[in-house]
Image (cartoon, rainbow, N blue to C red):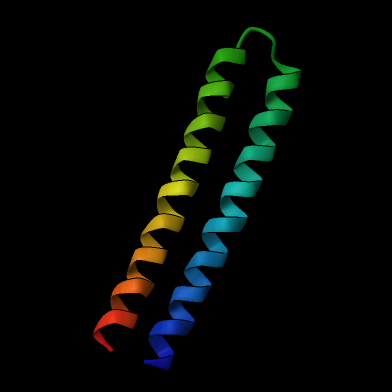
Length: 69
């Protein structure tokens, strides 16, 4: 069970770092490219939505493992 927890923590950390870097990249490109502003706003919004869904999935997984353990 420890191996599963370590893998979960590693994946969560990768998701957090990836979403943060993607959001920062979109914000930098948004300020630099005026004609592509709507595209980068949508990408930033999708990044935030993905992050919320990914965190929710891990919380639900933890609840299920706690309940059935």
